[in-house]
Image 1: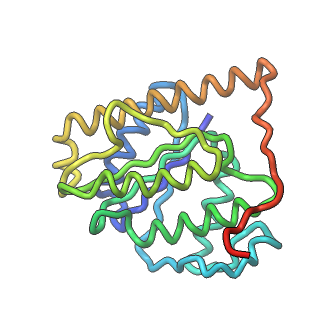
Image 2 (image 1 turned 30 degrees about the vertical axis):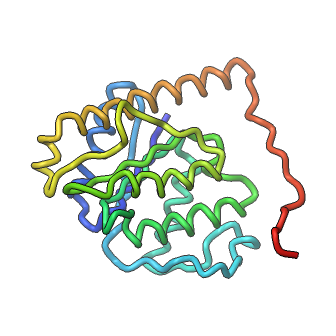
Image 3 (image 1 turned 180 degrees about the vertical axis):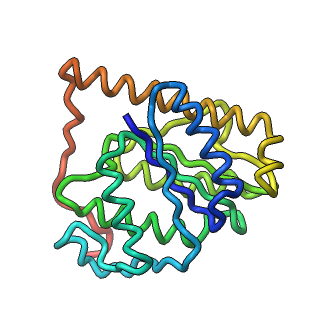
Length: 213
């Protein structure tokens, strides 16, 4: 089993990475592999609702070596996810939101989803404030994609203005480790369910209700 983690920071080895690595080390102890996918530090185009992905199952924009579609390809092989972002003005970075808008929307329109029924956690990193608002925004992607949400013993956040300061946030690091334990427990239970013949939930589809006609 493998967990794919997204580092949504512009700094490859910064505070967000430090938190993700704490999760990764604990996943390894649980016998689960992980990979940290760095979003990079180049501008990322936002979704323009062109809907070309409805025909191809992939996002039409391919700047920065097609980073959105490269992540989606890895997502098909992953069993769970952790999405990490620093806090900018009490919300996730604009770049990670553009990335998530595109990767989730284009994948929802794919014939088979890389995300549906797979556990996911969001984590955020801040010097001081804005964490819970940012955390809330990122969890919205999971709820609409039928992804079980992985929780912890506090809100999924660390505090610090540098990796060294994050390592001093003992409660935050413990929160990250408990995310990993809960993720591992959920993945192992899902795997056991599959072996026991438990099928995935049946999803109803049908007419979409618009409020203005």
